[in-house]
Length: 93
Image 1 (cartoon, rainbow, N blue to C red):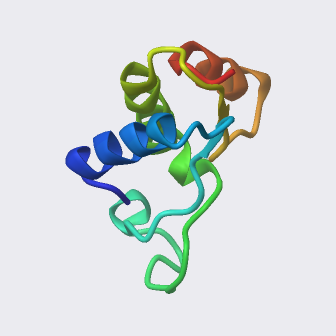
Image 2 (image 1 turned 180 degrees about the vertical axis):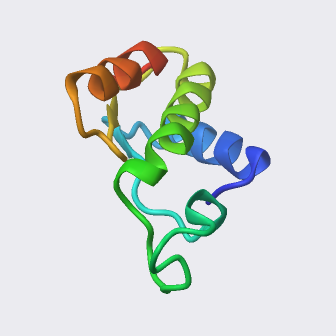
């Protein structure tokens, strides 16, 4: 759950420290993605389908910042070939 500024700082840090690649994303604490759903008040990291769009957008932004300088392993809400292709289209390697 990074802000835009934090995402830019992470991308800069990855490049500056010669990191070989990055896995984006993991879970989120943002419960707005499951508002009104059963168990929406549970705590801890949210994963799976509710994370799909948010994860893809973060991959897209990270890809823009990294500009091909290192591979991005895109994860988060992948439950189909279509979802996997969306991650690749957003910049996942």
